[in-house]
Length: 150
Image 1: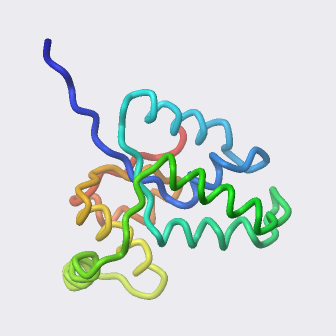
Image 2: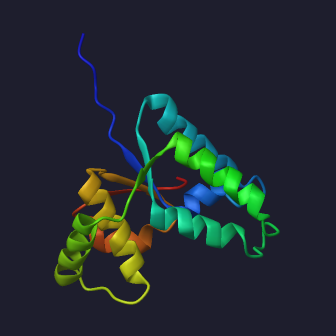
Image 3: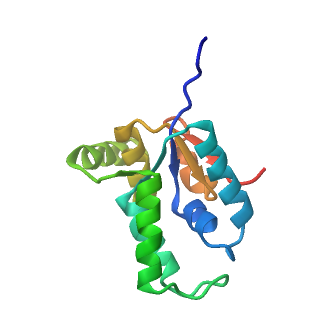
């Protein structure tokens, strides 16, 4: 019997926050999609950058939530780390980032998006699950952007 390999998926900060915070917009959609990836057997990936961005988001006031206390944040990070692969930002990621910056015009905050792509490429993760599709359009020839929602 032939089996079909399921491609790994990188989870962007926004979809991670939406999936973990019940009062967040798109909570049901993000949680359902991530659970679907898990049920399909896809390896889920985040990076240390995504974990830092997650912590930054959930520890400041949002329109949909009050800041989480550090013990709650700690529990969330431990849960995420146990459920997903966590990519470290290594020298090869930095080299790939510099190569991307030389190839694809971007600067300022866009460097953070380029770093996500560099991490994905270095780790062999072809898909990005995000709500910020336009932020990654410039990388469409390198990765598959999977939008949250229809």
